Length: 127
Length: 388
Ligand SMILES: [Zn+2]
Image 1 (spheres, each protein chain N blue to C red):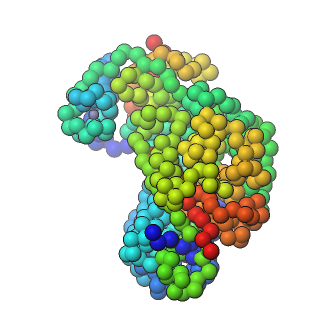
Image 2 (cartoon, each protein chain N blue to C red):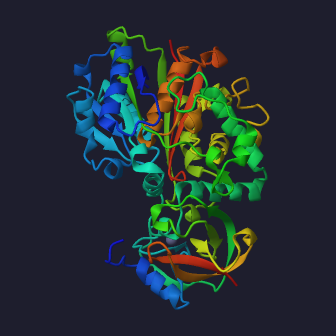
Image 3 (cartoon, each protein chain N blue to C red):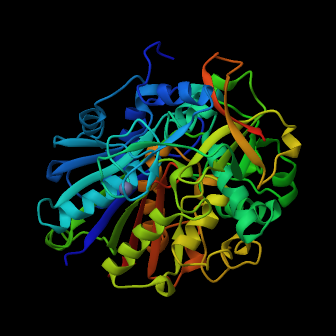
């Protein structure tokens, strides 16, 4: 991976590491994720940061056994989509046995690093 | 509105030929398409070529002119990239160009070289169809994304892995006599259920293979076909394209494909038909669950009921609406950039009674081809009908 940061995305991970993950919100209340100039729902260019709730809920998950090379040493690992209100997020699930993950599980956002690459990974941990 | 005739179709065998370049494969498919069409290469007005991962697998950009050259065609050429829907999108644009009178003859198709990347490399290449920042960097793979949809489907509507297994079994059965198919062998439900897991709940036999191959179509205007006395009884009578948010987590539904519904509704309206008129369909079954989402989005099954369609025999070769008589992506193979055009080729051959499985649909007049990109952020649907 390049050493050049991705504006917006890496800023978001920085904030998440501080426990201050956010979504972007337009005046009509549509949530989205950075980097973003325009609301994907309505085209508004007035996007403001909105603190995400402390916890979200897993809506679906999978345990991946055949990874990309970037996660070779991490497999098997769980990935989930969790609902945080204004936005859903995709993240890996840590701090729980893979067999114990289920829909409805309440999770909070964490940032871990890949065992394969050392890159930061958006992660969910049980509350 | 002027019909768009499918004058000729060509497919390489799909499979595992890592040493063959995509220009070589596409050249071969184009020969078959031109021979069948009776159209002179010098009459071609343009080339529309689908390819997804050529930069990664062959270090090759700017593939349009390369592929025109490979087909022996001297005409302007454009490469289309919409992940696994690349050549479906190329077909959609070709239909519009012929209909609006701009062009009379187009060479449309696609190719993909994948197996030279190996499993890990191909897995990495396929993953770039997802949102790199918000999905891939969290570890999402292509099978993983469909696994998230499968798990969400089971949670929302019910169904179980054994239901999906019947889809794989059906599509392998359909491929038995298709000499272009990668897997011409039957499998059992237990083979699917006992296969190694790729991304739960999906296993190896829920997944399409990694494939090399090419597809080519010679499409002409109705007037060109008549003036040149072409034998081209099948026409594309409806076209539709749909779109959605890129990342699965940004969609309203995790277990539906609104982009395919949008494409299907547009194609039905364009052709002046509805789902009840469809005799059979080729749909984009990159994973078993994808066939379920496709037939529901196309109104061939009600929402939440598509999962049992294969198990209950509604979509088998002898069922009411056979799905993926070619073997589908699952058994015929999925050389990504070739897939959308290959579906048009299979439907055309089936309708023209020139396919190994035509007997299953000998009275059919109307069929669909549904092609999808990523987790269906892109979709095309085409209606094909026997018009002569
Ligand atoms: Zn908005």
